[in-house]
Length: 148
Image (cartoon, rainbow, N blue to C red):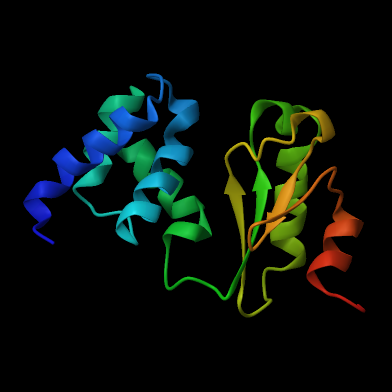
């Protein structure tokens, strides 16, 4: 793919998603770009930054802090919702705890995710696309490690 077209394609993708000009949607925008292109091209960073009303360095920081944007994809992905309701019900702490619990687990990425649509049962998590809500640390440990 011609990399000079990435900015236009990313802008079109963000237009289609109709994200508001708000830094809280930057992670979701990055995930959408990665899903569309298989990675987040460097040319996408300034487009996302401008659309979200934040510096490009902040978008780069999100990418650096989230395992889902670095290295080769893991075989399994545990996504902890970081939507407003889930955060309010302990989603940030749950993400931190799961990152510590599975930091050295090969083949598993623990990542921050955008809303999983389970607000009434927050906090929510997904493992390879299957959703658990409400989620807590002990349930997630058992879910990720069956029989363990």
